[in-house]
Length: 185
Image 1 (cartoon, rainbow, N blue to C red):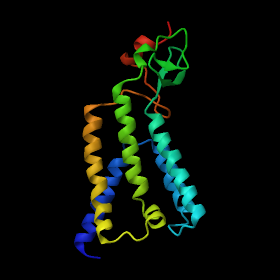
Image 2 (image 1 turned 90 degrees about the horizontal axis):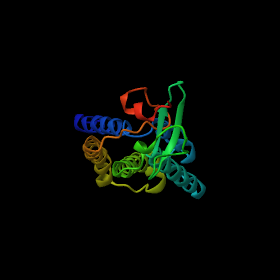
Image 3 (image 1 turned 135 degrees about the vertical axis):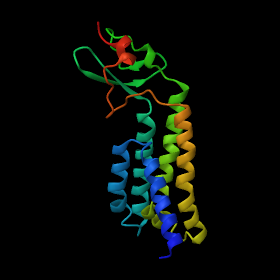
Image 4 (image 1 turned 180 degrees about the horizontal axis):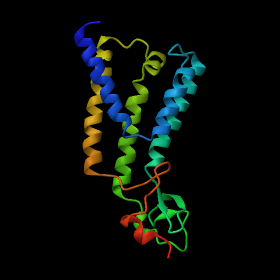
């Protein structure tokens, strides 16, 4: 392997690593674990394509859905989870005011970019590429190396401009001043 190819490969892996930080870890782990099995290590039959497509859709939905989940901790130490709605979190607890946890534009921005980042990771995975588009030529390989870092930079900028204040499933809220208004009295 040439030094140039190794440098590009290392930058690509670094870019993919940065992209993964923006996604729900469990979803990406599930995809990375099941994808080689479902794609038959890139040697797909028709059933493998359907199963891999279903995996990608389910994982993409999970990435988007987690952008709309949130949690709060009550004074007694219990963590409660819910889905953001226009009025607050659902399911609603009558003893806690959750109106500050309502849906915001930033939630949709995060969901969209999480979907884009997961799509890049899943659709440019070597097994997925070999399964769905095996004739990917040298131009495609350059595309595989350039796209993840570019999407990572764009998503990083957007996630910096629209920071998420959600503490979704698997990322429980700490007892801090942001949650003080929602804590049971």
